[in-house]
Image 1 (cartoon, rainbow, N blue to C red):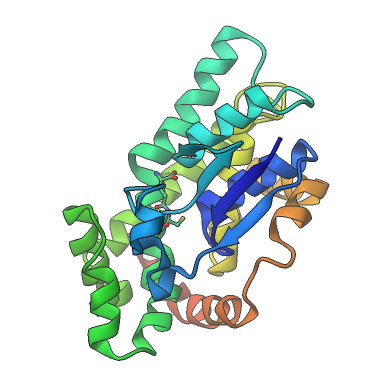
Image 2: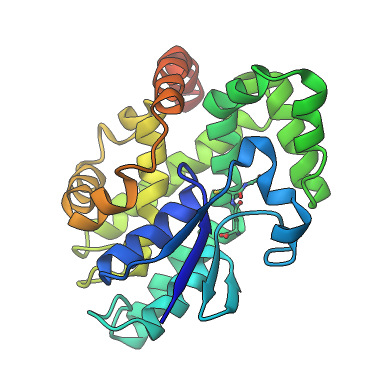
Length: 263
Ligand SMILES: N[C@@H](CCC(=O)N[C@@H](CS)C(=O)NCC(=O)O)C(=O)O
């Protein structure tokens, strides 16, 4: 079996697929895209993924897109321990968690990551070049929002609601982790895999204070980070200069984030 993954180092959606592949001990052929250079918009990639986003999985020549769908697909086709909650009700909880990522949280990660950190990669380029990449985002709503965040950073009107939504996500996690060991029940599942990169992204952006008073989230994050799959999914894929920008700019945005949370 050949598993190919078109992905990017620092892309939460790619990270969750790499975690699953590591959990199942599955090697893959990686094709890395440079998202700031617009590799995802090249015609040959659009044939695989018309949404111009990563990741894209190619399994023995068959294309699967959408990270949460890729997780479910791989959990079915790869041998190894089940990563799907065993009870029917547990599975509904697992899917309620991943559904929220698709409905809102993922989009808001772009707002926060871009608003605090990634925009500096584009600000370092000539403006026309940056706008050319952003102007080719196929979804008009997402395109206009990303341009606004590129222009305004944490001052964008999209920023504060995104922080508040993440605060609610962490509150919901704290609630469910207070009832069961993992997000969807007693078993480690696709829900835990899917949320790891989002909490890790907050951590990369110096927003770990958002779970200072959420001990269950803190413990869950320590536990998922200690799994061997975390190191396999992250080590060697992170760009140190980008992590440095996220740390430095995250530190600078901290007071503003605290103000938003306190309001
Ligand atoms: N719903 C998609 C979202 C994928 C997505 O937004 N990927 C981001 C990286 S995490 C991307 O490729 N962004 C490129 C761009 O915005 O141009 C999924 O879950 O696969």
